[in-house]
Image 1 (cartoon, rainbow, N blue to C red):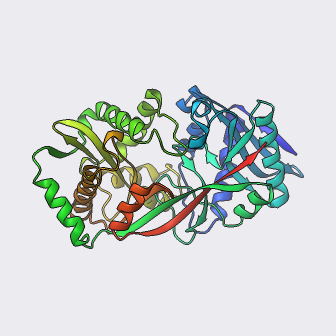
Image 2: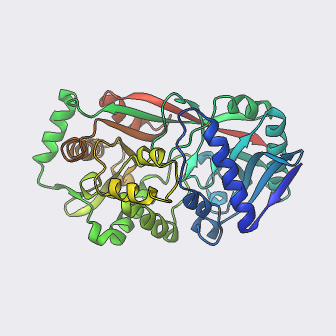
Image 3: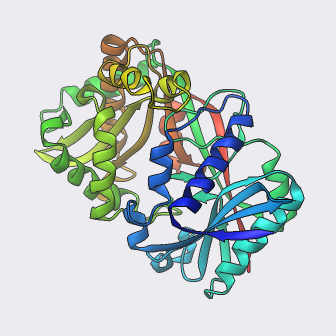
Amino acid sequence: MIDPISGKRGRGEFVDLGRAFAARVPNSVPQLRSELLELVNPDKNPFFGHAEAQLFIARRGGQAVGRISAHIDHLALAIPQEQGMGPGTGMFGYFDAEDETVARALLSAAEAWLRARDMTRVLGPISMSIWEEPGLLVRGQEQPPTIMMGHHPAHYRAWIEASGYAPTKQLLTYELDITKDFPPLIQRIVRSGQNNSRITIRYVDKQRWNDEAQIVLAILNDAWSDNWGFVPFTHEEVAYASKKLKPIIHEQLNMIAEVDGRPVAFMLTFPDVNRVLGRINGKLLPLGWLHLLRWLRKPTGADMRVPLMGVLKELHNSRLASQLAFMMIDRIKQNATDKFASKRGEIGWILEDNQGMVAIADALKTEVNREYLIFKKSL
């Protein structure tokens, strides 16, 4: 039986079921229950200001054995279909199942809900905004996920494909040893930029974080506007995200690049909070909050993840664009090692066909450590 669920109690069961499934997956990291509840709460998450969703739980003999979301992002419907979304595109996410039979039933329920709302194709898993956790992990289960990264058992792929889905987009993450020097070519590019008086690489100002977040939003929405899967980040969403992210923002790890005094690029870097969430088992009580606060103040030894960067579209495919990226990465690398004793960095997600970012990752001698797939199906 597949139950559509709603309300505070239903959302709580939905989140707790997901946490129970995650606990079975080797190397998974328990996330804060309160944070997960906010993501599926229409009164809390501004994603629902332009989206509608239905949560489902599968039951067998009275026991919950799976879950899924079906959702429609109305901003995504206005995106050209060649960019991955477009008219008639619905999505599924938060996919967990006890076995293939349950998986098929859940996917069928999500598809029926979308079809009833005139959707003609479905993408997934995307949980729930494209800016949250897109894709199914199909490579990299042998290591714990870093901050804001999905983590799924390998067998989910076969169950999704058995229900008629085919991969449509690959997303990659790259890891690098940040204790090592960058290749000589990169060092020369960075030095050249440092000698260019037009270029300024500055830290974000945490005292003006709301204003800085708006600068980042403007660059992001311009820089990513032609990317596959792009959906514009709204002002409400950036306000929500900036409030949530502020506790993990360290000025020395987040950069804005200016040319002639004009912001043209940014790079955000987050210390991997999953390191401490694993120690407190994703629970703030009784003393988890204290461990978390201490770690947030000085995340010594933490791995670092670069989840977002962007350069204004007018500079794409220019030498200056890659130079700004290398300069920001170099400065963040130095600060991460010198001030936080970090040893490892991770960049991603990066679309498989994002030639500019793939070229930067290759130039830095990074290695692919995780692969995610987004699947599609006609309805």
